[in-house]
Length: 314
Image (cartoon, rainbow, N blue to C red; front, side, top):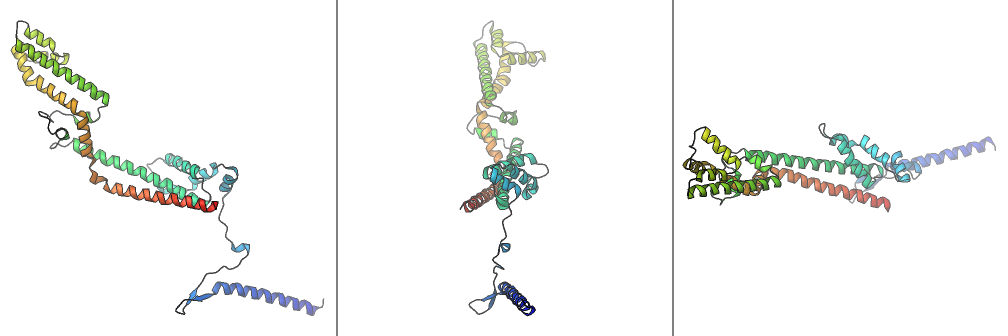
């Protein structure tokens, strides 16, 4: 091949390359016109070769999970490098507990790609925030209960049984009643009934009279009432006679027995009334709205995950 032919081929090749380059540049700078005749820039592909296709990043741990079915690496990586995880858990909260939650969600949804992993992490963050809502709700209720139990003007005890005669809030320990278990309530009711029945039996013996009425009436009382009566005698509050015992029962023992029997019988109603007043729904309105927002966000995020999996599967 002569030098002239070689130069001609070289020039032709260079011309084709310049034309191809110009075509690509033209694709970059092409414009379109709208209905008003104004130029509108458009975005078109720069080339159709493989270099122009931007592949989705597939990390080594995701590839391993796809081939082996084991998501341990994905789970560890999400816990270590999760963007949201670092900001979701506050300094005083349990990082390990959130890590367990996130690991469970990763195991359930098995995310593929960064987008799915981000959405799964978003689910964990939403659940974590809902946990805070429940904690805040409990704190608000506790504050309301404290306010109710310490109120000196309006006790829930009287409101719990508005038609119960002789019920008094004096000497009532609301915190003690609120924390009583069902077994303790049953025991208090049984003891109060026995105490009141024994006191009324002693009153009947004294009313009937007789030479041994005082001793019989004293023995009819329960041990606690007898000990209290003996202390009254030692302190010379009452004489050790039938008349003195009858007066002590009428003024002190029987009224207290009636009140204790009422309280023991009404403990379940008192508990419900106190909890109801302490709830103070107006304090929970903002929390309820925030919880509703989180529920909707959770639904949307979960729907996006399922949609992505459906598209990948299709």
